[in-house]
Structure formats: structure tokens, C-alpha cells
Image (cartoon, rainbow, N blue to C red):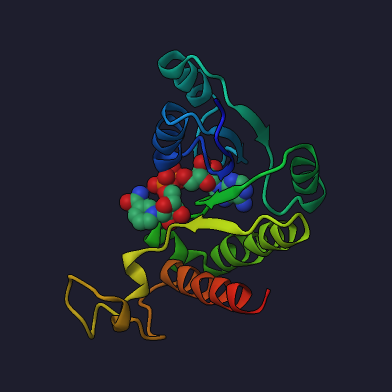
Length: 171
Ligand SMILES: NC(=O)c1ccc[n+]([C@@H]2O[C@H](COP(=O)([O-])OP(=O)(O)OC[C@H]3O[C@@H](n4cnc5c(N)ncnc54)[C@H](O)[C@@H]3O)[C@@H](O)[C@H]2O)c1
């Protein structure tokens, strides 16, 4: 019995592929989108070897809103799990604009389509980098968040946390 249909952005990535296995084992139907910037298509075959299920896959960049919308038209999702992200702290310091654009701007395409197609549930992985590690020592607590992140990667996570809070309050 299929319980729920889930869109995984980054399902061929490191954490994504493991999460895909867990969802399939619990009988969720998953659809994966990834631009394969930091992952390999062979991951899908490995998921199939373990689970006997080959997930539906779209090679799409989140910036490609037109093709992203086709995914929403072709599938009725209950939930989006959004982890597609550039995630190297050092690289974010060298190429901050790449990180702002990929992680913040292109995530907005996803959120707009979720609202348009009434997908109300999202799981979003934030990061310990949203905490100001110069002011607080781990373990961090939610009230340790300040606006003083220490690198652009952390800033992109904190901005999206706030955007998601806005959207959940007002939509
Ligand atoms: N790995 C960790 O230790 C860790 C810790 C905290 C949070 N996270 C977060 O978990 C998430 C997944 O991390 P991971 O380690 O699996 O990373 P990963 O690099 O293995 O997976 C990210 C995937 O996103 C894809 N991607 C990036 N930009 C995209 C875009 N514009 N369109 C489509 N696909 C895109 C990449 O190709 C890659 O497959 C990230 O959001 C990361 O910030 C990871």
C-alpha cells in the first residue's frame, strides 16, 4: 500500500540517497529531482538494488522553473523534502554569490510551486552554521540564533529558515 508521495530535492546526494532508502522501506512513493552537480546517476541503480524500487527521477536544476512545474503537474505530492543545496563552507566563502543564488533564489521557485499546487508540508535541513559560533558554544539551542552567521553557507540556511517561517505564517 502506498502511503504518501514525496518529492525529494537532492535524492541522489549523500544524505538524500540514504533518506530515499528509508522512505521506500516505509512504503512511501518518492520522486527525486537533482541537477547531478554533486552526485551521480548511478545512485539510482544502487537504490534499486537494495529496495527493488527504481524511483522516478528528473534531472532538473531548481532554477529551471518551467521544467520544475512539469514535475508538480505530473505528480501530486503530499510533502517536499528539500535538501538540494550547495553545502561546502569553504566554497561559500570563495563564491558567496553562487551560494546566495543557488540556495536562496532557486529555493524560491520550489516554494512558489508548492503554494501553487497546494503542497503544504516541507522538511528542510538547516545547519549548525546558523548559530553564531563565536558567541555560543555547542550544543546549540534554538534561541542561540543570531543574525551573525560566520559564513555565506550558514547565511543561506538562516535566510531560508526565515522565509519558511513567513510563508507558514501567512499562507
Ligand atoms: N552532510 C552534512 O554533514 C550536513 C549537515 C547539516 C546539513 N546538511 C544539509 O543536508 C543537505 C544535504 O546534504 P548532503 O551532504 O547530502 O549534500 P550533497 O551535496 O551530497 O547533496 C546535495 C544535492 O543537491 C544537488 N543540488 C544542489 N543544487 C541544486 C539545484 N540548484 N538543483 C538541483 N539539485 C541541486 C546536488 O547535485 C547534490 O546531489 C544540504 O541541504 C546540506 O546543507 C548536511
